Image 1 (cartoon, rainbow, N blue to C red):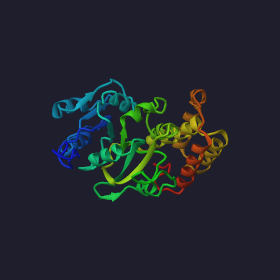
Image 2: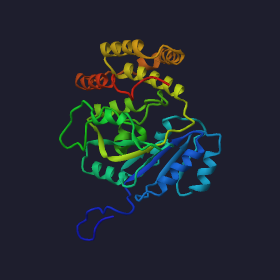
Image 3: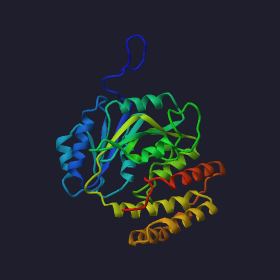
Image 4: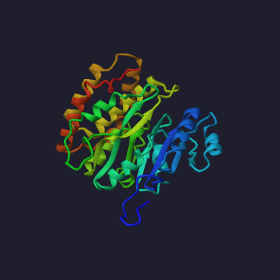
Length: 310
């Protein structure tokens, strides 16, 4: 909406710049709560849900209770690639990701679109995450706020080297140009590879303090399975994009520091099994970008949000 004389977008009412995309699998009750909250947003964004082959009646409940939302049913669990499928249906300049246990605070989607409108080389803005029901900040927020990366003065906040899909609004054009989420990673830290490729293309990523996402962690989450996938994908990203010596150092650091348990062992076995395709697709970043990745790696070593536990 624009004012009658100034042409400036008004600050209330619907906003047609952003589509919300979610993926879900067997979390019907939590998804329905999130969709109800998204429905009440003042921006009235289009919402696209990819149901990753749920067996608990999720798709039927969404079709019944939220007929105005787009429901995609690929028939199998695509993991993060379900977001790629949804973005194929996006017709707005921006796409806001969230999970079935996260939701955007009223007004944040509008503000994110304003930030992206004003900065054509900004690919994504990541929001502050509030953990519910406590109302406390997620530990990862400190890491975002204190990012060691430098960037141009026009960024709305600290420059980032990656983003969180549960709390980020991306430029649709940039997401497509970056190829979306890599199908080989499936799920678990899948953002890091896409973020790296966006930075390589000259895009910028930033944290924006004025944006807020709420996260009420699912009771159905399997933290051990997610840890296995996250560690496996960290190793795969390392060998897909880091130069040889940094890749060796990163791998060695993980071997020395992750918990010595069955979950870590499974992650390393799975990572090793995937090395043939990883090495075929290996494309190390140039020195300038590697310097930025190394800075992030050093900063994350002391982050309470980056522990391979669970």
